[in-house]
Image (cartoon, rainbow, N blue to C red):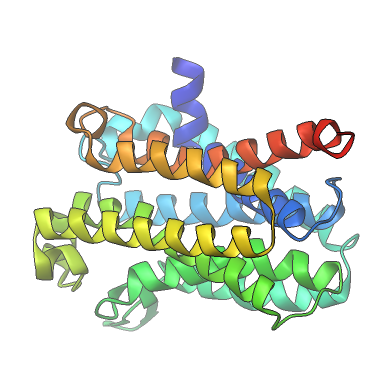
Length: 291
């Protein structure tokens, strides 16, 4: 249990989730799954950005979970700093092994991600961060995650950028990430209210926000259902059906919602779950093709 907590606190799980979603896209595009340098660049970049974000939050005295504050987290700061060093080293190594086309895509997305939480200071004046723009926070997260994990593989494998298939994958990813991110905004309502950040839960309230998350998840599955029936990707449809049911359970079940690791463990874990389920489809695909 302690190891799992360390992996979650140090944002290794969320970095694995970014890698898992990228691999999922690869299979959805009909490409054999194998690792390239850009996979590791995405992993290390995610690990670096999320630890930078968390470090800034802690330095500003902002809780990152309801039961977590700076003093409680202090014993694990050494782990976070080590992850930052490892991530930075990994970025430098993989950056030179990744094609320039992908680097040119990832750098702007990385800058946007950093500006999400890094304030720009000039004297006594503090400029707002991207997360402080009203209602932008959740849409920004959904867009960046989808752009990185969908468009980067598309560019790498020279697939048609604006095909219906690719755009469907991108929209599905945005809807899914939006649905699982909304409970984070519910969790952060008190801190967002104090900081003057306008979010959907502060506008709608907790119950309506949960309904909204469920509605967006249902929309995600409806789109996936139509998409993969049309493309006859039955194994992927099976994986997404399981993903939908388990994620829906995570959104509405009170006992799951009360778990200590609900947000950073369960909800973030659903992204890794998608990769695991799709990779499972990849492994069993030869048995179906042989029939």
